[in-house]
Length: 281
Ligand SMILES: O=C(O)CCC(=O)C(=O)O
Image 1 (tube, rainbow, N blue to C red):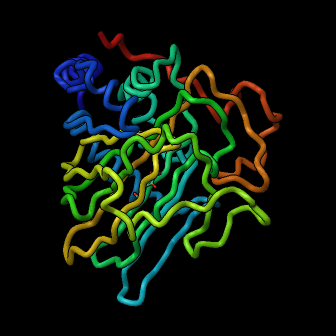
Image 2 (tube, protein in one colour):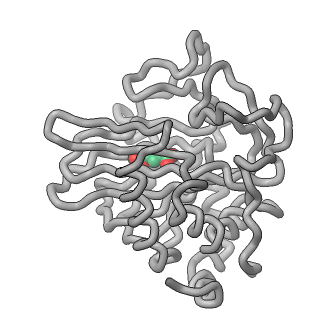
């Protein structure tokens, strides 16, 4: 495990120090930051094994006919010390506030997404903010790869889609709307018209992070490798402009005990501000 000083050095060497990274995030809505959390990979892998063996109340565990498994769970950082340690001590919040152009980085939640080898389950194209109980433009997800993932298996993005000024209906995996009677626009069929979009997709190594905006359209292919797992730890962040949003139904994640009202500034124990570990130049 690296101490804070070494992490600082690591971040200083990373493309994050290059304002190009922020520019790419703003223009494309997704950007890769390589090698920034290599030294946290083992800890998070341990946390994920705990999580799989002891899932939280919101777990989603999809199986396919050939024994594949797509395990997803979120909002467990407060009970899994490995997650908590990463979120509070690694400097990940500093990356988030740098990208968001925010003074503070407030944790929205973490989400783990594990596609075991031979899992023939894609992650459908979607964008996240309509699922979320948060309004505001300053936000990002930091999708941290915990395995080597080749380009054809890695998460993919429609470049610039966060700037389309669109709000697409949130759907479940079976395409049914998340909110009953939702009249919002249905996402176009990206796969049928891939040549009409600029699609971004990167091969990744353990410790690489892909940052993306809550409105950037993204999805992920199945994991057809017959030997490699595809584990990702996605931390979600909001900035100073974030307010709590009541949607047409139960959001994902739901935060059932949260007492905030529509328009309230995001605050409270569910959504802590993560103190800065250091100043990024
Ligand atoms: O990892 C995946 O399959 C999808 C990830 C995703 O949709 C997200 O992090 O918002």
